[in-house]
Amino acid sequence: MAMASTLGASSSYSSKAVLAMASIPFSSPSSKPLFPSLSFTPGKSNGRKYYGGIGIQCRKGRSQFHVKVTNVATDINSVEKVQKLADKGSQRPVYPFAAIVGQDEMKLCLLLNVIDPKIGGVMIMGDRGTGKSTAVRSLVDLLPEMKIVAGDPYNSDPEDLELMGVEVRERILSGEELPIVLTKINMVDLPLGATEDRVCGTIDIEKALTEGVKAFEPGLLAKANRGILYVDEVNLLDDHLVDVLLDSAASGWNTVEREGISISHPARFILIGSGNPEEGELRPQLLDRFGMHAQVGTVRDAELRVKIVEERAQFDKNPKEFRDSYQAEQEKLQQQIASARTSLSSVQIDHDLKVKISKVCAELNVDGLRGDIVTNRAAKALAALKGRDNVGAEDIATVIPNCLRHRLRKDPLESIDSGLLVIEKFYEVFS
Image 1 (cartoon, rainbow, N blue to C red):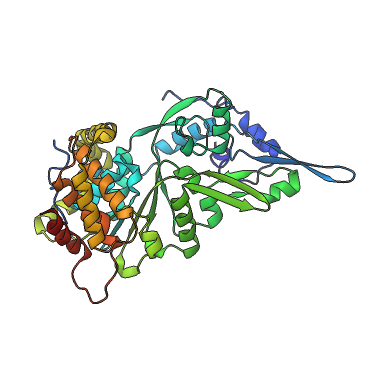
Image 2 (cartoon, one colour):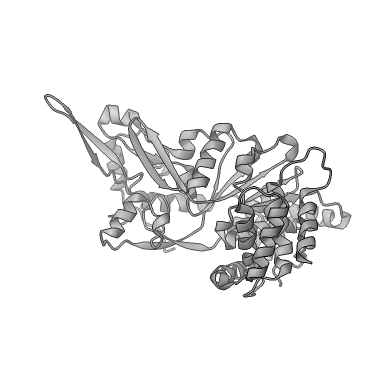
């Protein structure tokens, strides 16, 4: 089992070892209101996985060097099942999302991105110790399920060509019927010290030289496709990794160029970042890629602070019992998210409201049109979360500061918060 757990992460095994691992049979068993305190106010597979989908076998002739491109298949599905079983008992307990006290703006932005991933993620900035990473990681329990092609390392969508890997797309266009499974949307953590090869994926050149096989090992961007990529302390991220994120966020694809071999795969993810503004500013190019921006402050109310301390102590003492006490609220929240995702396509926004949104953006000198697009999407998602079919002005008032705050041009002499500037302009236009 120890060998199985490292199969996906190591590329140093010999081809015989990989085949031996692939042949091992594994088996697994078959497997209150939304927020009482939240006020919406402004402020071929056959079970095999082509791990990377490319392999090159080389043979030397008398006068030239022949290269043959083939698929290298490893039975990763069974290994992953064993990994999940091994990790199930050792996973760190996650603090329940419904148990987070206050921080309504941050929680709302996270929920809206789960309902409509095309909003483009959220940047959470605030004081240290305010529950930013706790809130993001607690989102895992609320994530819905999605359809993927069984055995595909890129979580390819079986219905949307834009979200398919190249190999899956070719198999579907050839008329092949692919096995489809349901899996939960996953969240991938991007560590600050990650290397570019680990993030993008890499081609094992050593294997090509020693064994005549060149295999691609997918990275974190492949794992995060159609899921969530979370970067804690994103303002401390190295510049070369920021460039990688910018490229993937702009195109929705990750391309790896190594030693004359080019491999591309879909990399569409919800980008969530958190950080402390005292530790440095974020590059404007990356900041603009976040659909929404939430500001988090320290809770000043003494009663709320006591409640937070007590609940955290209960969770640390007995995580299972604490999570069980919030199970009903968590399930209700899951149902509301699932219902909102289903009804999102039917939510309408009047043309007059669209014009006013764009007028606010224009008068605030917001560069580009991302602000207009994100505000429309976020307002629709909020209406769907409330169970309505039409967007109202109050929905726009709730989300527009988060959609435009980080897109305003910085004035070093301006003391007023950019979110307040957006609200002032909103009431001026919508009145």
